[in-house]
Length: 363
Image (cartoon, rainbow, N blue to C red; front, side, top):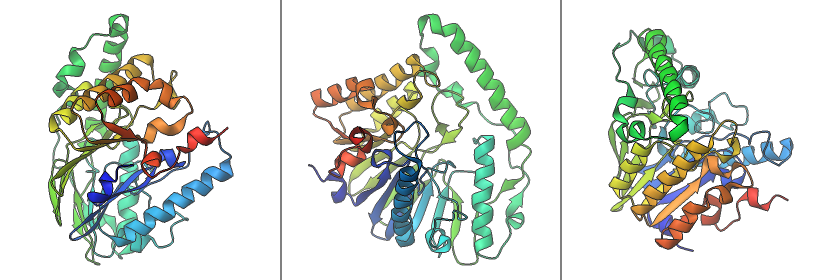
């Protein structure tokens, strides 16, 4: 088994193929450890394990994530879902202060724009608890909104919007129009009303900044935090995420966060044009098929994975949403076939670590 990631100082902390929802990695830089998306959640009710075992696996993952975060000098949170960040009030944490604070650099998804209602609230829970741990109040870091005009991100998705899906086109136009109304409602009732939270330096020296669209140099690693991309389809109600391009030891590592495939063609083309050496890619949520994830979007996700493979990265870690039901490999078999044809190494996190994906081991 190739040990590509070890040579890059990259560690796969926890992923869904290990039995709990997560997409957490660490990078060992010349100025300390960078942890990306320190979150974990128990598997959904349909996952074929007992509730007790799901909780046990979630706690096992959390302990490992917390251990890495205590070592970290910097943490990145790409969006505010609990499988990507653990709030300080989580009762299973041994020491929330040591995990999140102690003069760390916290690079967080901007909590004020390109964010849906639930993540707006979760961001404020996280930040208020971080402030309180250092003896200050979030009220001291609030401001009036700094913008009221926001570009519709769908207007930049020229490839996706130009596609035709035959008889599905009429329904898709209806969904896009409905989505645009949802987007405008977020602007009118949330982002332009506020209050916004300001970046901050906390009393213990912890620095909190918004990552969207910025470049950070952490030791010998350069991290480009992309502008927000949809968490799934166009106008996806789950909101936005900020994928990452990491340059380390002369390699390019793309971390997708939650693109669910990706489903959107423009994102796949962008990733392919970067020609990354390593792609850490969340696959489509086949566990939601066909009721909450239709055949059209599954097909798009497969084709987009093929586009990324065409750039011939040396390694793809294909995991997260994909590893939540037993037919996952069959549903995306084309992806594995194309990777084999092009001699691209594609593995789940569990397989990279020398283990069988847990979902494949359950009778």
